[in-house]
Amino acid sequence: MTLNDPLSNVLSHIDHYERLGHKLVHAKNNSKLIREVLNIMQEEGYIGGYEQKEDRTLNINLLGNLNKCGVIKPRFRISLKDFEKYEKRYLPAKDFGILIISTSKGLMTHIEAKQKRLGGTLISYAY
Image (cartoon, rainbow, N blue to C red; front, side):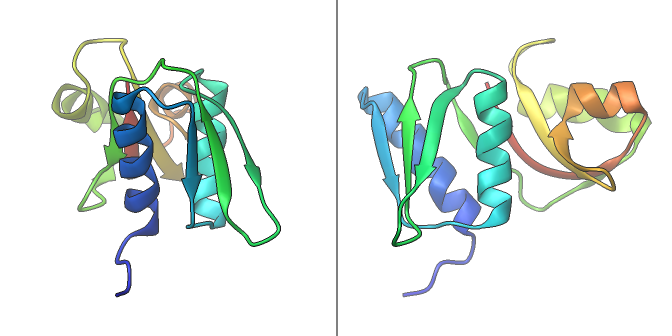
């Protein structure tokens, strides 16, 4: 069986293990996009970190700070004036959580994208 969306698979594993109270997730999927999303989640304090093993699997440390995370499908194009609309749709409250956006300057949170006045494509959310 093949996976259609490896990022979705990793984030759903993280969400599931977080709800169960585990401290470590062993993810078999690995790509540059997944690692970049995990870096942003680590910078924002949602996960403790991750390490890549020799067999290209990831061990992700959980802190217990994550309520929910997931991917956004379809990947909506977002302009500077549309941020508030999608924040209301995917985040539970104002200034609570992050949207991860792919811009021409790389992956970043919606807060950074607003400050840099960039639009892009919605990738995932976490709160």
